[in-house]
Image 1: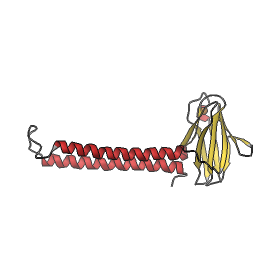
Image 2: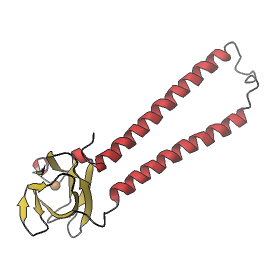
Image 3: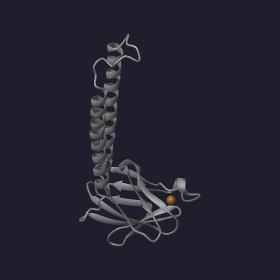
Image 4: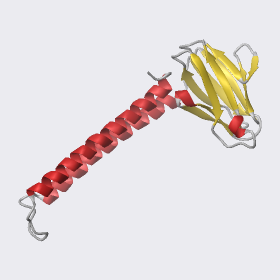
Length: 188
Ligand SMILES: [Cu+2]
């Protein structure tokens, strides 16, 4: 099970694409082998044995369009789900990114450098900004990330369904200490 809904939605999208790709591949290979067998011995300039190529082309275009638009639909839905800022989060945490660490500010004003504690199952809304250069606040396990830009507040919501310690990483190359720009989120 994924540790939160943001990860869930990307994993199910990944499974959908993989299933579609595998199914289409198998179908194409079967059709390919079938035609190879059926038209063995036909010369290249002979007719295609009664198959209306024009009709076939139209069917292929329509079926492809349905598949592509369905995938597009699920993809856009997943993006909207992830990007929509919840109106009533359980907890709002301010995040200040700077070279090269993360500062968390709890709703009561308490500040914490590099460690955040949240209860499991809480809908957390991060208000992310940067005090110097561009950074990107990312939680790999939840497949969630958002730009940290000076002078701007960006929103990222997550929910941790599994207790444990989660790593925060910077996803934007931001100078010498970038690789070590990490923090911990402890879910109790
Ligand atoms: Cu950074």
